[in-house]
Amino acid sequence: MTRKILCLLCCLLLTGAAALAEGGKVLSGQAIVDGSSIYYAGSIDSAQEGVYFMNADGSGVSRLSDAYMTLLASEGGNLLAISFSESSVDYAVVVLNAMGEKTIVYDGYVAGGIASGGRFYWGVGSCALDGSDVRLLIDDAAHSYNYFPAAVSDGWYYYLDWAEYSENVFSEGESYPSAARLCRLNLESGAVDVLSGYGARFLGLDGSYLYYCRNSYWLYDEEEGETYEAGVVSGVFRVDLAALTTDQLAAFPDGGYAFVSYELMRDGVLYGTMSDYSGENPVEQIVRMTLDGGQLPPFSLDNQAVTLHGIEDGVLYASVCSIDFSDDDYIQHDLLYALNTADGSFSLVNTPASDLLYFSESPASVCVSGGRLYMIVFDNDAYAISFKSCALDGSARVTLARGYSLAAG
Image 1 (cartoon, helix red, strand yellow):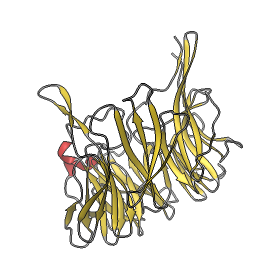
Image 2: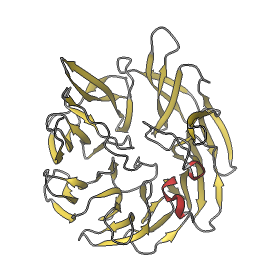
Image 3: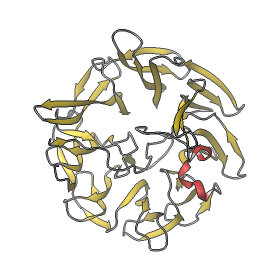
């Protein structure tokens, strides 16, 4: 049977955008859209692999490196990435400048990066944008991948830490470190505050408050060879960063067949998804609340389960996975919708049966910049991972980079 479907080829990195981070918008570790500039890792012509620079319209292409890298962050014409081709180490965090000159800033594998206040930050360290002034923030080389940068604000570095469960986290199909806790580190004194228990998802900062969502998570017991659920008090929480006190703004269903998770924070509103299978007819909704816990009317995309990608100018972008069957063939693709948060109306952006959004481990495979949508997709027609752009209504669609074609089996 010919199967035009992309199984996610490999787990790259967590590259979700963090609140209060500056610089470009990261797409699945393969592309960064930074205003009028774009960085792309892979092949742009199905032939030569490397790291490329191009203008936002795809013009002015130049090759910064002939080696494949995972892109983490960009700012001021500099790029933070993970290199897999260094002679002395298996993995290295590097800074590439506009000339393609490379500076190694850390030996090790890390999860994500952000730019803030004229510096790059990765899980356990930071450096100036040009790769100088490297600072070790967390001395835990053995678990460098188990720290995820969230934000930098008022002299504090906020991050997710799941080092304790580095060998036991069971996260198949997950797009976030599900067994992480939120912490902050004082950049002057090095003092650390633990802000949440495990199972936390960072939502954002607003004034003197930090917001996070917490859900139960799964761990793997090596001795028993089984996975088990670590139950927690689930809900949305707000931390007073001055008093270090925590309020629960919303409680989630305890067990059963209903699941809620909040994922986005924008313009004073928190957004998440709710799946309820407790009744005869399943209910799928996009849920919302204000920053003081006030519930807002939910949205629905025809009662379909959705993945949230981001919000720009009052428009929420969400996708629905769909499979089309035809005799002995089937095509898996994603329907990308633009939902108006003012009235709940929505429209289809991409062509049905065209693309499967490429997540790696990150849901950030779609972003908006300069009045256009950018996305990393598996192109069912070309049978290749591609980098595409289109107008906000889905028109004026162009392919900015086409990766290696995968032979149909």
